[in-house]
Length: 243
Image (cartoon, rainbow, N blue to C red; front, side):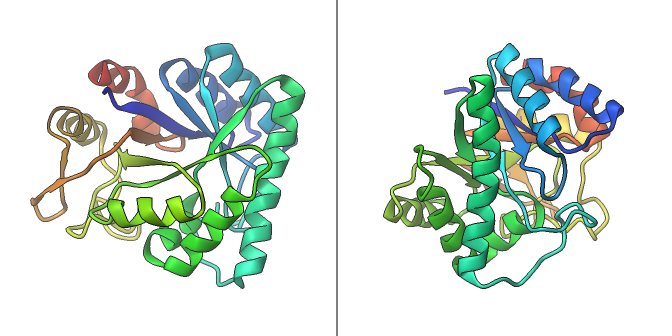
């Protein structure tokens, strides 16, 4: 089965970024839409949902820590019940607007530091899964494809959740299968390296880590970040590779 292509969108009210959303949307399968906490607002959610509807793109909620200043990229320590309520409220906010414009939210992909924390901390992961599973509508859970994918699938199943495993087109991987920290050089791939990584994932189901090791990844979808200019500029080429 061909890999799907997803992108984090709806992350600004600036016209230039809104133009990016319009540029990307015709070429992707899944739009992870910011829920107004780390970025965006109700109007941006509405316009991005309408873009997805016009282009027949599947919609997912993209919740985050309440860190607008840091674009959701700073870790926060929160009690599980607060984190559950935080994620629930963001899913509900996007879902309400989606209903108004005739779109269904079908999955959830956490953003930034929440995503990274979830991948390494079982308590955070369980809280997010609980929040997703408690939604009135059935939702699929998107998380990173790692060597622990079978464990994560079992965890999700305990909450009654199906999963979408994703790989990243524009991010460098550490040897353990995690993403290389953005604080380190080379964490975000150039256009050329991104296209090489997509081709390798599509053809061989592997990525090359920061130290040159080949790592097998069983992914369903590939992410290109909407705030990565090189990624956005190459989105048509990525789409063609995946076809």
